[in-house]
Length: 314
Figure 1 (tube, one colour):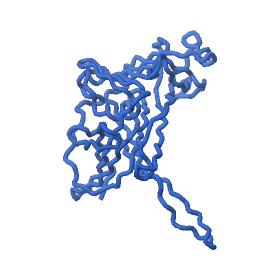
Figure 2 (tube, one colour):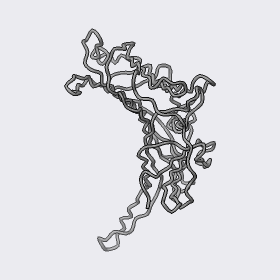
Figure 3 (cartoon, helix red, strand yellow):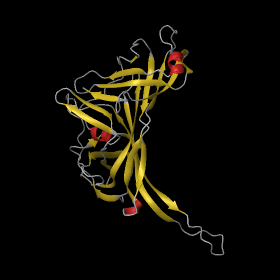
Figure 4 (cartoon, helix red, strand yellow):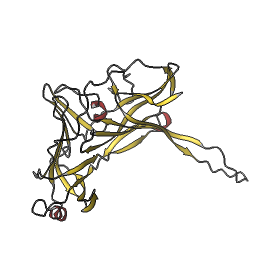
């Protein structure tokens, strides 16, 4: 019997696209919530004319694997040392810059982008496991920062097809020893205004992850490439007077403003999310337990390029 909670996910950066670097439970295990593995493919209808209305069995064309999961936002516990989420973040179209003893920073990439191999083990009572192996995986990252909750990263990856297999169950995995900080005392600022009372900030990179068709590759599919992004998000501060913040003026002129929010305070386990150019897409309103709320969907755009968002772990 397989139990849905008995799953282990490993992820490791590939040095060559689509080449399995063999992640291990000792170095590459990532704590996850709600792993979903789906084997997808193009079912090719044949629609042959044979003097009957009965259909013929289709053929399967391109096939691939999709995997999605959520992770608590936590880091290595050592300033300047990457955490277990690092390879996954890079494979969602980010560049990494590590400053020893100080910080690890991620900004959007437009050149060569990393890929990962992901292993998902479904454990069974017998000591065996089903292994889902996804190579050449690239994907999308979104995040949820909600007051009083654990911050979340939500990942969705697309990778090349490998048949599932029965293997011996891996040994007990080793994870980052840190615990995730709560979203509190987060120093939220928008256009240097620090008095806004918001319940949640959400950001989605909205990466365009596309198939690279290739008649010379197995299944006619060479891999997956990130060809574009359109970062967006939501912010829901309580209503304030126009003198405190005039959202309508920013919206009408599409004036870009700087956003910053911090999660955590401990060395090696603190994240600052910042964006230099936030513009409001629409002015909406909501009710939060009888409190009037401004519902502000937004988008993030570049200042000088490849800088529309920054994730800085310190």
